[in-house]
Image 1 (cartoon, rainbow, N blue to C red):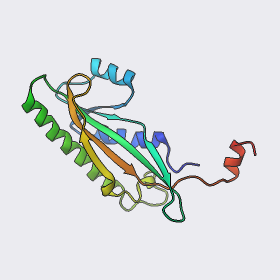
Image 2: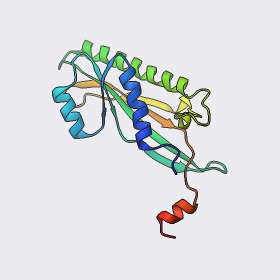
Image 3: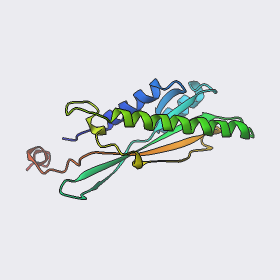
Image 4: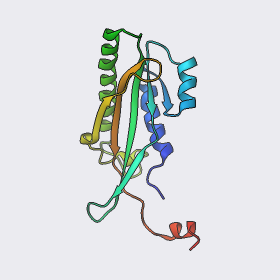
Length: 168
């Protein structure tokens, strides 16, 4: 079985967004969810965090395969059209939020026991983090997109469970 599921990854980042004092909403990068949030829920002075479902790449640099999952988190806030100072301040704060997330992930990845629910963060490498401009998007929203490659082993063992799922 997989060492970490989509729901575990989603729940972890949602918990970080909920805990962060500058964020007022966590949404999957799903147009219906975003449209509803932008219309009814988002406060103009707060940031939202949008997360895309992770992408992945399986490779085998040594003897054990790795499943390199990449997540994308957008930290966005609405700005008034033409308010360039507001946009710049929003970008400054968005960058601070993403640095806060990286610091928290780095801290959460330390000293993990084999039975920790976050054991999939073991081996987190801060060098796997990148970010780029994420705006303007939607309704004059600005901010940054944080891209993180998560560590993890690839679950590509052709064992009895896999054989059973193929009916072998």
